[in-house]
Length: 376
Image 1 (spheres, rainbow, N blue to C red):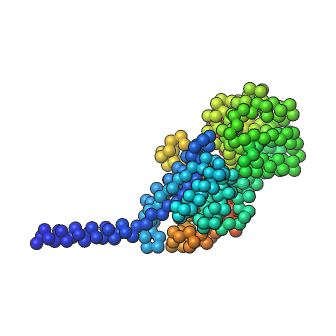
Image 2 (spheres, rainbow, N blue to C red):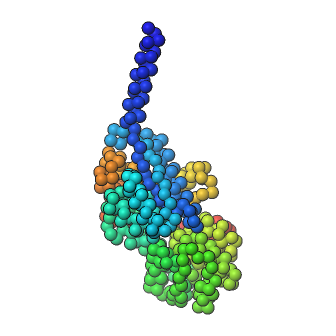
Image 3 (cartoon, rainbow, N blue to C red):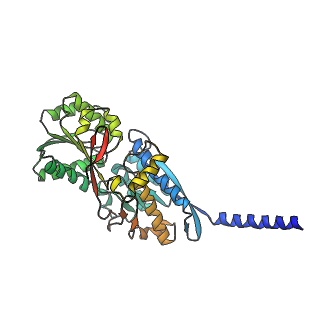
């Protein structure tokens, strides 16, 4: 009799466990960034932010629509290539992910945004900064970082007002990001009385800038603005040293504002003249920045670059909208995204009607003794 009772209890417990597991639901969140090539360190950092968020969310035992939710990341590589970016976006649409965090580059995010809009999946970028991203007015597109209008203009104001520079050359890598931020810088610099003495172009794959820099040197600039990423900027700094241009100030947006540029510049004296801008507050001024960074470093030693706090917050913003809608169905929770008022690691996140972050901040940084230091 006692054995039968024990068996009955075991069967009942198994049934309850089976019912509970049947009520659990897996919700997939996509992430896209360059996971290969010269920008893979950015992509790894961004993916780490999403993974941390998903681990933290799963530890909360989130219940939506009466089901306990298990979140999973679906990470894809767009290799910073617009064609691959749209292909990956379609792949995520076909996989019916509940939302996407990404992409990293404006050149991949802008064309991918139409794919996500057409298939009804929201995406939030914490890295792509070209203002054109939000111009179509898609209800599926959101950005939680300052755009290039803030970054390019902020650097131009600093060059003119704080550094009193008069002659600046501009280089961009012809990507949507690089060209966009360079155009804003040049336009704003001119209004501040700075003469743009030369405009040169390269690519996001280039490694030899000697001809460009030699042409610029002949114009005797006191500063260079580069619209592009750190792989090219760091190499450029080394080649500026070789040409005796170490005293020329060097400006750039968030694409160069990394710790990786220190390694790439490899001891170049020109690194001491770098001033870069990134959207958002410095880690020390973010509401949860330092505590979050300590946890990040424990999980991913030496991998932090720039954007992982934003991809972390972007993941939470998607889930916050799901919670408020009591649904993981994009059709149901998308309308809740525009109503977001989420206290994140980076800031309190709320959106303008076009999906831009309300009240974005910006941080200027320099490099001293091989370390990145925030100016504000």
